[in-house]
Amino acid sequence: MRDQDVQDREELNQREGCSPFQANIWGEIAKMVELEPGDIFSTKGKGILGWLSRNLMAPLTDRFHYGLVWEKVDDDYFILESISKGIAIGRLFFYEGGDIKFYRVDCPNELRGQAPVELTRWGRSLYDYLLIPKLAIQGIALFIKQLFTEGRFRRIRAEELTWVQNNSFLCTEAVDIAYDAVGVNIIPIGTCPVPSAFKQAEIDGRITEIKEAS
Image 1 (cartoon, rainbow, N blue to C red):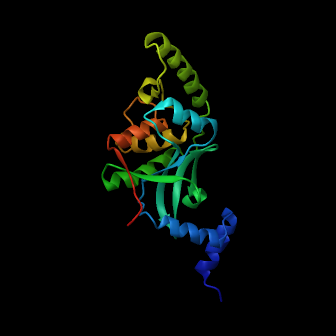
Image 2 (image 1 turned 120 degrees about the horizontal axis):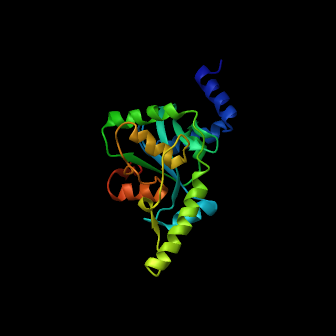
Image 3 (image 1 turned 90 degrees about the vertical axis):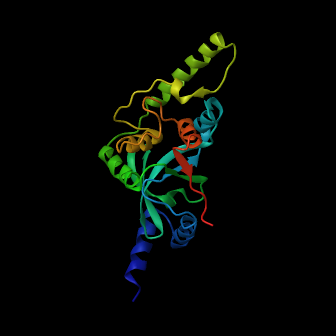
C-alpha cells in the first residue's frame, strides 16, 4: 500500500496546481536557504508598476512584491501576503521559477516569529487599490514641484509621499504593519512603505538579505 504521507502530499500538489515533480524541485530550491518565521520574501517587479518603481523612486531597487514567511511545512513554507483579493495565506512554491530574494529583520527571534501571527489580525482586509492612484497623483505633483524649485527632475524618496494607514493593504503595507504590531519599525513611522523604503531599510541594516546556504 502506498505511504499515506506521500499520497496526501500528491493530492495536495494536484489541488494546488503543482505536480509531484515540480514540488520536489521546489523543495530542493527551498533548501538552499534556511528560512525562519517572519523572514521577508520579495520578487522582481514586472509591468508598468514595476517599471515605475525601478525608475522613479530612490533608492533604486528592482524588488516590487513583498510578503512574509510564516512556517515550514514539509519541504515548503506557508506564506502571508497581500494580493489582489487582500491578505492571503499561500505557499512559497507559488513563486517557483521567479526572481525571489529573502531578508531577515534585525530584531529578536521571538518578535520575528510573532510578526506573521499579528498579520492574521487583518486577515479579512482588502487590497489597497486606492493607494496606487493616490501615489501616482502625488508623484506627478512632486515632479512638478521639483521642476520649479530645483530646476530638474530627480527620483522621489518614500518619506516625501503623504501616506495614512487604513484597513486595506498593498503587499508592502502588510509586511510593514506586521512588524509595527510587534514594536519593530522596519520603515520609520509615517513613511510610506513602498519598495524603495525597504531598500533603504536594507541599506540602514534594519533588514539583511539571506544568502544561499554554503
